[in-house]
Image (cartoon, rainbow, N blue to C red; front, side, top):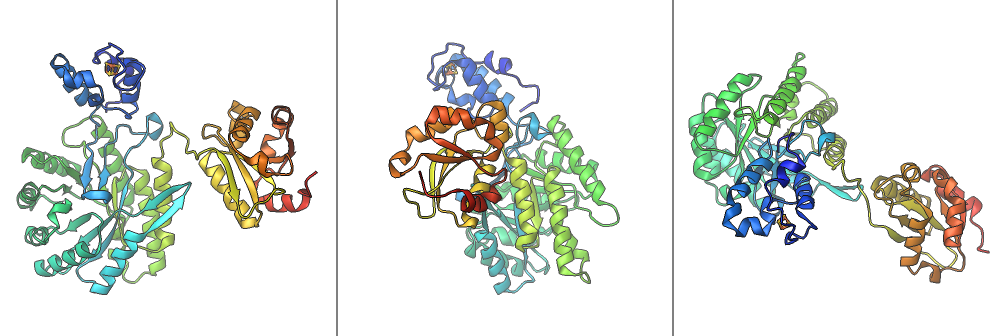
Length: 472
Ligand code: SF4
């Protein structure tokens, strides 16, 4: 989607009858939903059904097509989508498809090692702020130079793992052998890579097996443009750009500069550059034979983080240590949350531990980071209690108090919608210390006593032990 696409330019192409068939109140509301990508032009039934709107429908579909093409890798439930981006800076709208993290295996590893890396990658799952963080793909490297060995490794990976594959070889014979393994081409693997030397053969494989393909031209952007244009001229649409991941001798700066130039040019719809970007931080291991593996994994982790932060849409990592992968996944989550929608949890009353009529009642907001921090601190302190989660539109305590979203009415709403009052032999709640100024208002509105709790939720355990005595 162009940065200049606006509400009115969309609205002008809609039927403007305000019929409501799309579920929105009027065409302007629909235009607004389209702008934020929660509706597509095809969601307007009159435009789809009536031939007089056909041209406008086509124009709208072209208008909202993202500047960076969205490329799908794999099939089924774990299909990976990369690209689809429309803005250079997250705050201009939002980033859409988070960076895919692929873990490598090679045909020089033992079968046991390959299986164990595949299982660890597929099962990786961490919950943060209520969202699951996972690893996305397996990159199978042809390190042996033997097509049959590469094919049997791909077979082993494909049979033992449901994740999408990236087939890594510049030898078209090896790539073809891997693609002919039963069930592999149906998974739409990403072919890595077409280069200036093999583009014809690899491009033909991508055509024949209908797979996305990487155009690779390390640290040569003119060469990359030429290569991507050539692949386009073969009719290929699902292309990923690899400008090279150079990390030694001060070249990391060049790598980052290349990524920024490519993304900037792609967003400006420059020819052959509107494609997702690929980086391989795992290259640090290629020159690390004598280095401490912990130091190398740490280096890979921070380079991967840097590249995720600078527009890499897919990265290939070798480290599987939790301390190396987790920082990258956590940063990715932070970058790819929608800045227009604060991450929130459902409001209501939660029971923590074993509660009874005299259990303490605490209050917090529905901003996910606040909620999970408070929950973790309460659980760690061993306090059994009720937790009132007020709907503050996803804002933290201080911001919610300042903006009026965290107020006595919101707390009263939760009390009214729950049965908590009937379960208790007291009417007392502990409010966050940062919401102290709401005490009087809360007491007037709810009829409950409001105790002012600590400023920081890590002090809840000590506060309850010290101040929560038998109910009055
Ligand atoms: S269905 Fe189409 S014409 Fe009707 S209100 Fe929605 S956008 Fe407007």
